[in-house]
Image 1 (tube, rainbow, N blue to C red):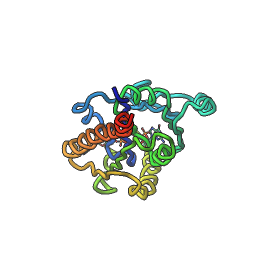
Image 2 (cartoon, rainbow, N blue to C red; image 1 turned 90 degrees about the vertical axis):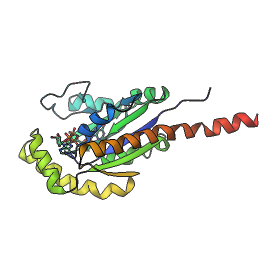
Image 3 (cartoon, rainbow, N blue to C red; image 1 turned 180 degrees about the horizontal axis):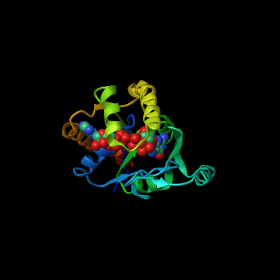
Image 4 (cartoon, rainbow, N blue to C red; image 1 turned 120 degrees about the vertical axis):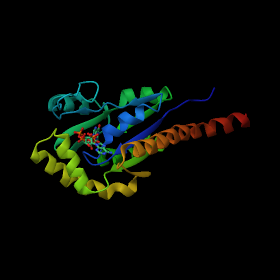
Length: 206
Ligand SMILES: Nc1nc2c(ncn2[C@@H]2O[C@H](COP(=O)(O)OP(=O)(O)O)[C@@H](O)[C@H]2O)c(=O)[nH]1
Ligand SMILES: Nc1ncnc2c1ncn2[C@@H]1O[C@H](COP(=O)(O)OP(=O)(O)O)[C@@H](O)[C@H]1O
């Protein structure tokens, strides 16, 4: 009867804090969600799949998408382009789904300037310490020493944005952190129904 518009769970956090790992845990416990697969010019890591982890494209293709107005937001992160395609996000929201964004702090700021801002619940995720972040990046062993150094440097900048987020989550014990993220995801879904409030009131006034 009333619109069943979805909601957005936006997560950010320094590279290597465990965002992808946490999300994989969360997916076991939530339903009717849509993970927004970003487009990037970064080269795929071993095991990453085109259309699953990211859409991997050339710089030229990415810039064509920018010109075509295909992105809800895009940013240059660690010297590569990353962007969120608008169309699939809109479709999933119209289907009433919980849309999940794993985007950086610049992307967060840009999304918060769009019409979708009221539907966003944001979570900043990090490790208990910077040393632990370095350990995780090293043990993941997907990036070169230079790339890891760049990511650590950016982590120190990114952490300054933490107050812009609705929730702050330390990914220490994976299971504990994932339970908390599931709770936030469920609350985010409920929050979306609050937007039906005006429709209900208006229908009563007819
Ligand atoms: N602004 C923006 N950032 C993104 C997008 N997709 C991914 N990112 C961010 O880009 C950064 C690097 O991602 P990635 O190369 O996968 O490295 P990882 O964080 O170490 O797994 C992370 O902070 C992501 O949250 C996007 O569509 N837009
Ligand atoms: N809670 C945790 N405790 C210990 N190691 C973790 C935890 N969460 C993730 N990791 C490990 O840290 C590394 C980085 O995790 P990943 O999910 O790739 O981070 P991100 O997506 O934020 O870049 C991976 O090797 C992963 O197995």
